[in-house]
Structures are given as structure tokens and as C-alpha cells.
Image (cartoon, rainbow, N blue to C red):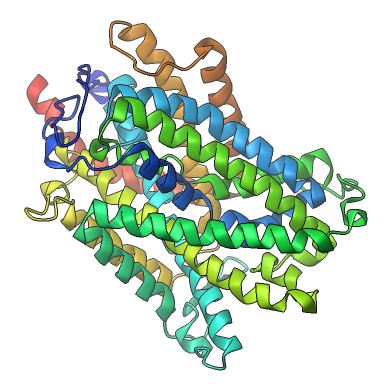
Length: 490
């Protein structure tokens, strides 16, 4: 049985793919998805996934609680870790243009059991992240509505459950209605088709990038350099300022980069994945990191960093300057748009991972059903949308935010290891994109990701263990018994 747990999925070189031409690579049946995405759309998809919570929510918290003005360094460290993993994703996605992301890459290199483990952790990254961001979207929307005197009551804009001192308590609310509504609307969009989703995402990205440019352009003149002194505040305990705080801040803002790998889940729908996937992944990472550094610098220059620990730090900073009150409302609109695109990409990614797992027999066949007209994994889209809406509407999501980062970091580390393994086991495979200096970059990527996983999140190991046990039960009671490779190998 131990040997069968690490059975590897056969890998075949993927042929060059042109628009509309099917590809029969390592996943049979992958041609049922429609290839329509260009390199530009993939870059915008990555920006749509990444630019959102990092700027509009997490930047202030990381600065106020952990890094101070040096949150800029935290973004650079997190971006560096993602860049190392991004290079590995680029090699895999160009070589294996399929829709399973890290799950599919792990199956081809490290075996079925590891692939299931990573696929199960990707549920944390995509579905739970969509729910978490939807709650933030709800807060910004209600803040904007309140400005105009039409804000929703707390009973309809907050989850009825919360966690206090480790216990679940009733808050008096009924449902977070805006969070449920946005997930329902975006799930409907994902149901209709990948092309429509990409077009809407491109429009949203244009809006939020415009808002960010306006913020930087008009707020920069109010920056007070004294707010950057000291750049790295003196350490006040574990994870609070100093170099240790910068590292802790990096683990916090890492959530801001979650989603760039969602570009790889669309590889099965890219027109020319061998060329476009590396451009989409690395291009979006570089652009987003530059944006984060600029915005974090302006933000910490507007207000002393201890005052930025709010759910809406950018709006909070602007409130201190009456002359910029008009910009505050525009920023709120930009936050709503930005968080919308993050939810969109997350809800696009999860059903496609389930699609790949179902094609392999590790999940029920219904997750592999493709709509005859829209050519989307519609059953998985519906199921993911329902569960994400329930999480956002009724449960406290704050604690799960760090679980999202933990699951993602494990996936990233596995992809880095997978590149080295496949280079040794299948050196004959054509690699349209190769990680430069792979013997250095791949191990370094795995080490950095595992370090960010292990050090800051040790207090959440019991929750991570519980999530893993649940996944193992599903695998051994269903996936292992129904594995397609297992049946073929007898």
C-alpha cells in the first residue's frame, strides 16, 4: 500500500497549443476546456488576484503591529518568496498546461498522496480566501453606503458567530448579506464562462489600478518623512518590530500575494501556454510588488504607523487630511472593485482544481462535469460558490486567514521541490521555460516558504492538523479507492 500512495501520474510532453486547438498532455480530457486567454489577460488575471487585500486591508495592520515603516521590506521579502516559487510555477505551467496548478504538478513528480495533500490545502487558499475577502468587501461596501446614509444594520452585515477566547459565541447578527451576495454574483459570472470572467476582471483591474495611481499622485505631496523615522522600530517582543517584526510582517502580507498562482489554474484555457504562462505569472508578480512598495511607502508617510491598525488603513490615512476627503470615497470604490476581482479569481481557480482531481478519480465525477454550452466546470463552480457563501455569511473568517497562508506556503514549497525531482526523473521532457540556476533557486524557494510557514504560524498547528486529518479521511475512504491511476495499475 505504501508504494501505491506515491504512484506518479505519467507525464507526456505537451504539444504546442494554438487558439482553439486541443492539447492532450498529462491530463486526459483537458481539451474540453476552451482556450481563449492571451498573455495580457493572464497578467491581468494575476494582478486581479493579487491587488486587493494587501493594499486595502493588510498593509496597515502589518505596519502598526509588526514592521512599522519597514513594512516595505516585509512586502519585498514576501514578494521574493513568491518570485522563487513563481519561477517554478512558470516552468511547470509551460511544460504541463493543465488546470490543476500545484496539485497536478505534485501528482506528476511526488506521487498521489502528496498531490492530494496539496490539493486539499489549495482549498484553504482559494475557497476560504474567497470567503475571507468577501467579508472585507462587505465592510468597505457598508462603509461607503453609510457615508450616504443607507448603511445596512449590523444584523445584516456581520456574521452571527464569532470566536472569543477560543469559544464560539453568538454576535446577535443574522447574516453577512453583502458577502453572500457578492459570492453569489461572481459565482454566476464564473458559471457563464471564462472569457466573460476575464473581460470583467480586466475592467476591474483597470479601475483599481487607476484608483491606486490617484492615491499615490495626490497623497504623495502630504507625506511627512518624519513618519518613516525610525524606519525599523526597536523590537518590543516576538514578532513586534525589529528584524523579527519585519519577518512576521512578511508572513502577514504574504496573504497579499496569494492568488498569483491562480494564473496557473487557467493554463488549460490559455491560447499559447508555453509562451504566455511564464509571462502571466512573473509579469503579474513584478507589477504587483512594485505597486505594493510604492503604496506602502506613501501610506506610512501619511500617518504615524501605530494609527494604521484599522480594517481600512488607506481610507483612515486619507481621513486625516480634509483636502483629500474626495479621494477617500474614490479609494473605497477602488477597494470594492479590487476585492471583487480577488474573489473572482479565487472562485475561478477552485473549481478547476476540483475538476483536475475529479478527472483523476480522487473526487466524485460530478466535479469534472463541463457545461455543454459555456464550457466551464459548472457543477464545481456551484458547489464552491455555495460553501464559500456559507462561510462568508455565517462563520468567523479572521482566524482562517492565517490558515490560508499556511496552505499556500506548503503548496509553493512543494512546487519548488517538484521542479528538481522532475528534472532528475524526466530530463527528456521539453521545457519551453526553464528555471535559471535551478539547483539554487528551487531549494531556496522551498526553504523560504517553509520558514515563513513554520515560524509565524506555530500557534495554529492544532487547526492545521484537524484540517489535514479531515482531508486524509476523505482520501482513504474515497480517493484512494477510486483513483484512476490506481485502477490502471491494478
